[in-house]
Image (cartoon, rainbow, N blue to C red; front, side, top):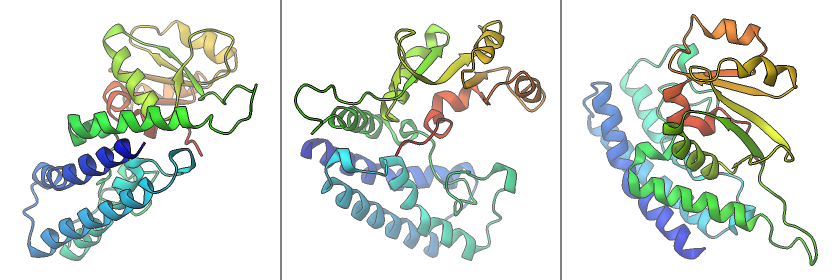
Length: 243
């Protein structure tokens, strides 16, 4: 566990400056001295947060690495406000971090680079395994909540990895209790009605999902809709949060 925590800390802290630099470049922001100092302060803050998390037994950690990474971006958000950068329109802001009016927080560890993403996946697997510690002899450890996945083959690997990192597992049979059914509506649109009628919470996604098609899926009883890109990059933000 110590090795996993150390690698997570090193990879996330190492990825922080480059991630913020790419964020600036994408929005054509030339960082001044204040923003540069904020990046240094944010890197140090993230290092402290991950260090403290690493000293906590992994099964008892209540905040995931991405949430800690987001917290490390608060100094940058404050500096952007002082610099006079306009925030995002209200409808485009994060629903998970009220302070993040600029859309700074990453939705997936994949955008932090391969090393950070691999470390995040390792943390997710370790946390899920540790959840059963101390349950007593003869008792099965609690299982992670299950998500039923109905998707194209090309998406399966990335979705499985994202679910593992978020603390979920893929439902392999009908006997498990399914929290959410994730359905690619471009490939399997006919399955929606049956799933909704069964009382399942359906998350519909696809390349065809947009502002014009979303109302139709909602009226059909779908719980949540999202673009295919968002599911592949930010799946954890679309699922119910785990304690």
